[in-house]
Length: 190
Image 1 (cartoon, rainbow, N blue to C red):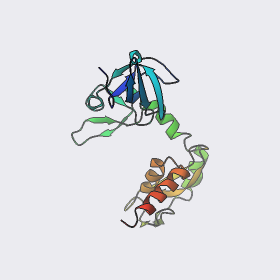
Image 2: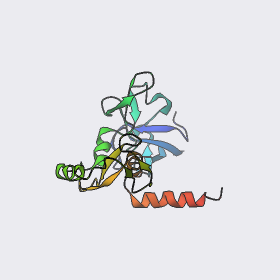
Image 3: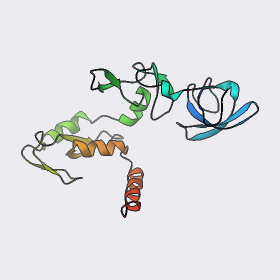
Image 4: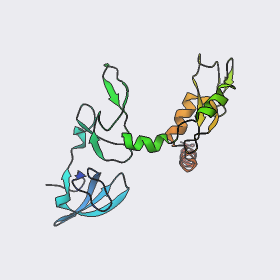
């Protein structure tokens, strides 16, 4: 019996939502449930016959299925998720984002001509990251990467890998970065 606050998975396409979309129950009335589907950030009234209970603690490693952290659709691990790295016990782990969502996140790869151009100005002896201003000895005290625009494939500049990861975490999205700045300012006095 599905209850309020349970996580559920959609068993058939409905309301523009894909099969296996994950949501949580906000309310139940007779044969319908009010479900907030996380991946679409959308509340839907749906027939109880179209959803089933999902124990989210039984997803992800070491289980067969996991929930993509972008689309929030329950998918098969190692089939729908690329291998990312090896954990401390030597086991392969998969990315938290499914292959389909990674295509959107990764966007257009750095153009070959741009890579060639940037390699001609590759920092060799000393480098100051244009974002964090940290000084480093390239590939000794910091790894450097060619940052690029994922919509055009054009290079931007050489930056440290930490800043590149940071930009990626914020999806190269200025609005998200502004929200992070507002958040830090709001908590600066604490």
